[in-house]
Amino acid sequence: MIIMLTGGSDCGKSHYAEELCLHFDIPRYYIAAMMPFGDGSEQKIERHRQMRAGKGFETVERYTDLAHLSLPRRGTVLLECVCNLTANEMFDGQGNMRDPYDAVMDGIDALARQSDNLIIVTNDVGSDSGEYTFETRKYIEVLGRINAALAQKADSVLELVCGIPIVMKGERLI
Image (tube, rainbow, N blue to C red):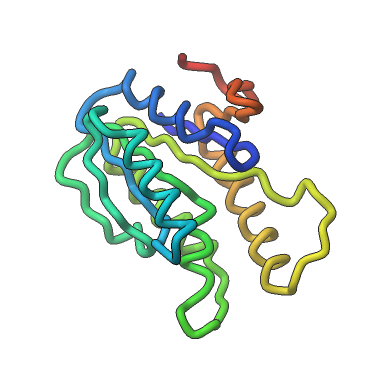
């Protein structure tokens, strides 16, 4: 089963995703895609570590190339999050940009083949009308394409609004 969780930033997606994982088989893998860049990301990473402490997750820090990640055995996989994975695949350390669509989708397909349940966290993007740099506009466009493709693949799609899961496709499992 593939479950996609989307919504704005800090809307409760991560908390809901972790609670959902607890209703599925072990082992539980947490694929952490956020690269630690500076104090802000370090604090967010630590907050997420504390949130999942004692819940039986095996954390796998993997920032790119999910297609070649091999999990020890099948179970429940939580990918946190597609936004970071997309940025990591899109921009290299030298400021070069490439289309990350295939790398992200191939990686998620590889995770789906290795899991009984795959829970994917992503952000809603593109619904505002802000003025952005060329690179940011390209990122929003490709993340929108990725999110649309993931929603097609997913058995259930839920949007979190103020911590409340709203079913967009499939069913609410908890």
